[in-house]
Length: 207
Image (cartoon, rainbow, N blue to C red; front, side, top):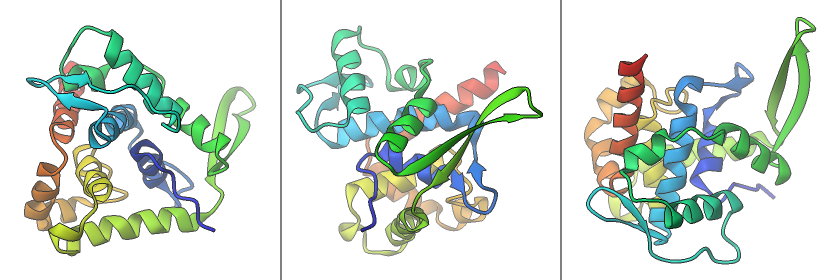
């Protein structure tokens, strides 16, 4: 049985893994991408809504909600309102948290090692490569199928992968060739993908 993660965070983490290189790609913006994915999931599930460019919690976490999403929802509920971009830019170890969650679920295998005998490193390996294959197939289908048949989660995968510049999923050539379709899918996802692009732009400006 192929076990695909339920959350956009888990799916995008796996899509960021390059099986040819055996490592995660787009590391400089992966934390922003995964934070945006969490917000997109809460919005898609109807647990937050957009209020004048800011996420606002509208429902409590249900019992089977992913723990990382439940934590994010609680933070939004008890924090002062701020923009989607500000939430995406908040400093939290999201990459490590999502990695640990996927390891606990048995989706990835983690192997601690030391580089040059000095620096601690963690090697990540998906336990079933078919999971990532299924996710890449979902991305391809979202770009080709009639828009009415594209599920909201798959539309978000494409929109966030593009906004997060995840070129291991969508090449720059595809950005150009599929520009109109990506824009159409992005419109289905609300404010999060565009807020992610602004967050990445702000990080580049600051650096």
